[in-house]
Amino acid sequence: MSNLGPTYSTRPVLRVNLKTLKQNYMSLQKLVGKKTKVAASVKADAYGLGAHRVGRTLYGAGCRTFFVATAGEGKIVREAVGDNASIYVLNGPAPRDLTLFFGSQLKPVISSMIQAYAWADATKEVKRPPYSAVHIDTGLNRLGFPDDEFEKLVTNKKLFDRLKVDHVMSHLACAPDKTSPFNREQLQKFRKQSSRLPVLPLSFSNSAGIYLGDAYHFQLVRPGISLYGGIATDDPSQEVSQPVVSLMAPVLQLRYLQTGDKLGYNSTFVAKTEMLIAIVGAGYADGIPVIWSSSDEGAVGHATLQKRRVPILGRVSMDLTALDVTGLKKKPRIGDWAEFLGDNLESDAHAAKTINYELLTNIGSRVRREYV
Ligand SMILES: *Cc1c(COP(=O)(O)O)cnc(C)c1O
Image 1 (spheres, rainbow, N blue to C red):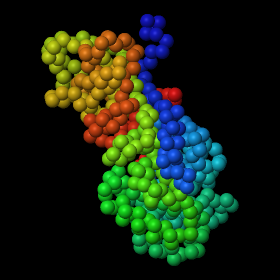
Image 2 (cartoon, protein in one colour):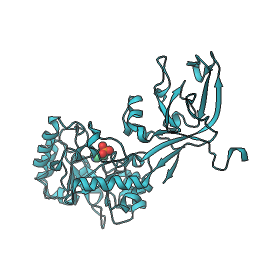
Image 3 (tube, rainbow, N blue to C red):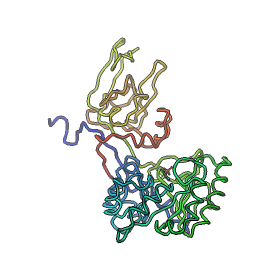
């Protein structure tokens, strides 16, 4: 094996730059100013980066409020950050998760009267039940109290007191587009509705919302994608965050193709001239989208090797992807690393007809997370 070298691996790696993650947190904190605290959205395993290490790192940067989707995610974050932080569960309470809520002091985000009654009931006999948050719907029509139910909550003081609400939030629908009049509509509604509850802090903005300006910040903001280096708005030039993640795939084998040779499943690519192909160890099971396979019109997806963009050729398969390395100055060596995402996260997402969020959360569990 020695000719393969001691660092040779056949397993793809997600390289997460924790220093840049921390810098992104601090840049956002600087952007919103002292009167607003930056919380972190760490749901879906911190967008695929690994909730434990991300949670710890952000805690180290000063973050004391975290948002997850489910109680199971909350437990992992609690273990990472310790007791001196709030962890809110966006999807709300559920009977089968009560042990997690109480055991890890997770705060449910309550979005309906059904949830309000369920939580009030569940905490009745509990000595020190966690606080909770109220989510007001202001037009997204996803989670959150709709108008009629919010009226019921506001006028039922007894129920409201039992919820021990320590945070009120809402969520924007069109924040990436600064020119959308819907942003202001939602803002006005949030101001009006939240003022009817005697609770602070308020939070309203995800990453994109932060770039809508001070009026959208309140006491707390809840970025996710901006922390992880993804572009959040229609105007990247205004954004302060830097790339954090690269998906690295090792070169496993090199192939010379002669004119007429076919490549990969279904022989979708046929060489028109002599060329050099690198087979790298990452496929759709690792988060390389099948839609990056080359088409009759040419390449769709790319990787970076020797700082050059190299096209994907043929069909992306489960564990492997073929790269055209004919044009590189140096012939790649076995064990060299091809990079996906990184500085090209946005164009990679565009090529896959998807969004940066989905590329990140689709990184497979087989991919080793490496923190630098
Ligand atoms: C996911 C989520 C966020 C973070 O969104 P980004 O666009 O990644 O910043 C904030 N708030 C809520 C309610 C969310 O579901």
